[in-house]
Length: 298
Length: 214
Ligand SMILES: N[C@@H](CCC(=O)N[C@@H](CS)C(=O)NCC(=O)O)C(=O)O
Ligand SMILES: [Fe+2]
Image (tube, rainbow over all chains, first blue to last red; front, side):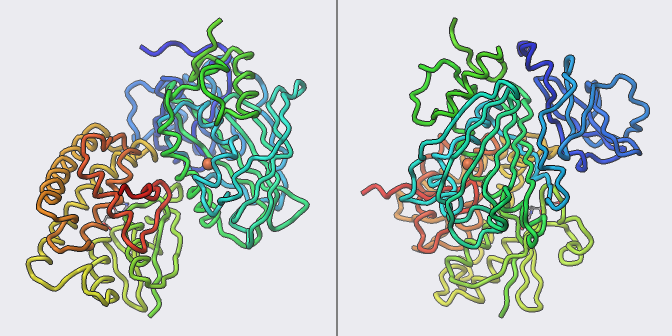
């Protein structure tokens, strides 16, 4: 029997699907915090989520017939739910509402690793030249330069700024190598959002979100969001770019051991665990998150 | 000639064709298809190219082809001046087609497990994994005896053929389907040899071979 999630995790909003990809009148099943969920959309297009009993993936359903529902929120093109008592708000991504942005899901991809490991990999620039060779990095430009990390008290999120990296192909819209400046936010224990210089418009930043759905302590689904300034590429092109990157991360992530993220600062030699990773681990510890992590011995 | 490959980056079946065209130095254009999450291979325009609704599709001028194994044979026969990738010898042709069929079985098992775990396809994970292990066991043995007999590749010739290209991707991607290759050392050595073929290229999820052991 899996252990019950810690109360913080239980009360969080968790992403479960790209809203548009849920078919009206058809059931899709998934796993959240070791519980099997069923989801669909009603004729009004609104998602409905509930604890699955004997429902199977692909079954027909009239959403109106589902009475015992879990709370639902839709945000950033995704459907979110909560197994406990949710807070009112989900973290903000104000850029998403800017009229000229191209917003898209890039697929929900299952990975055999804990959600916090996936967040930590997202924050790590050190792997760019080795894993995303000739796209997000290339040798000999392998050094991660000094950057700033803080935990914003007001917003309760980890924030890394002034992260600079030389990138051969920073985005689909890039036509040449450029030094890219990144800002990383971790506004949710299992979600991160990055901002990077936009090749098409120097004054703006592309936004990429990774929202992890903790399925079990050692497996999750990564839901990828792109909110781009790009006036020429198609959605298919933009998705392909992001999926290429994520497809490279996948085997690396799945080879991590242990699959849960150790929070004890002495547990792993900090080659990978750089400054933002240390701040992230400490922040999870202080919050009392125990799901998908190996908590610090007290 | 103008070749267009209707392609999805994360598809091993599409990668087979990118790989052979790269090895043969055949120029081609990519038409990206939003296989996931868009399911564009089931869209009307795509079904007109391939009524089976499957990637890859390759267009060479006005000729429209589907099925990765068939296209590998076509590309080799048409563009491989060395004649090595799909030789004319009847016995070798039969041998290659035999392994193309195995490649389909690897897709139906190893790729199915990967689609189930990674892309939420409603396939039977355990059954797919078992099926892949059964094939990998036979492949490993075939390659192990081959090594003893001085044969490095799946078929008899002293060089790789399209059989090796066809079987390679979903062997390499098996771990995404929860299928470990730890117990198949000869299979692993073969994947290293494939990755050292001149003109080899990677796809997302497959990394180059490490430096050769001397
Ligand atoms: N025998 C075919 C199999 C192709 C195949 O399974 N393609 C997958 C993508 S890698 C596909 O399009 N599947 C969709 C479907 O079968 O409906 C080949 O080798 O080309
Ligand atoms: Fe990465």
